[in-house]
Image 1: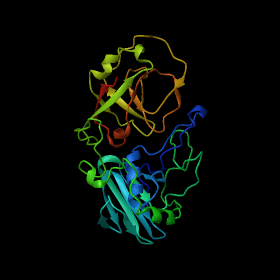
Image 2 (image 1 turned 180 degrees about the vertical axis):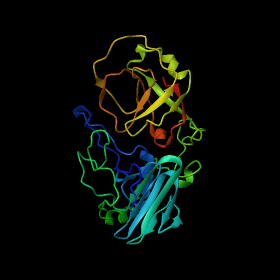
Image 3 (image 1 turned 60 degrees about the vertical axis):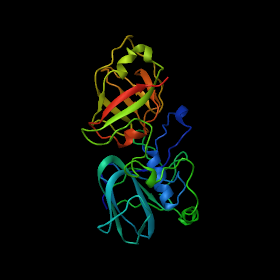
Image 4 (image 1 turned 120 degrees about the vertical axis):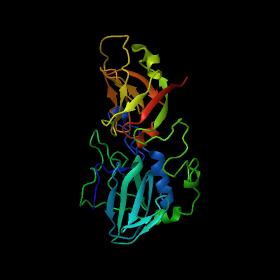
Length: 300
């Protein structure tokens, strides 16, 4: 009914194909997708929907059980507010509406049985860079739901190890207590996020200590491919160009302007700009809005 600015089908990604030039893709906030799947009784790797900032609205042709996790947003069923961090029963013909994110960026919608689009290379994830997987949602699109009998059987099984439930989260189920040093991340103009970085492989191409000396700001040019930062330009100590090298999730690449960018789920698998280091955990960036301050800390 309302696709939102960028709503895509995501699971935990298509791993094992980087040598063929295929990135992992998958949910940017994987813990939130896992949480939503557990709430409806799905396997944690089941495909759901990832919305961006403005949410989406879905009309169900059949009765379903859904859950919404991730960004803090108001959720309605037929214009009646419901609790997002729980299993929600939606009648046939009813409309589920996920509103604008009040905190964070991305909400995750799980449906009992999963979103049953055709997998590509073992994953149902939409890759916005390569175009693999299903297209992004548009108004009027119909999505298939999988057989929810599997979900019904799993609904009463214990959660998997390491799962963070709503009661264990800090503030809400959308923002678990991650060991990132984050304080109020995702809040425009007021949040600060600390990210651990392991230097290398090309830290010797820069005055590497500058990366940790001053804060950066997330810019509006960020997306599922990468998080672009603005701040003090890093000083190059070596001139010249590199042949393209392999790039991994969390790689901090430094283009010619000296402003670092952090590669996220839909990143390319190779790149020619030097990589000064790799972020230990990029999950908090999934919910960090433009204007959020980022500080890097060194990891031995």
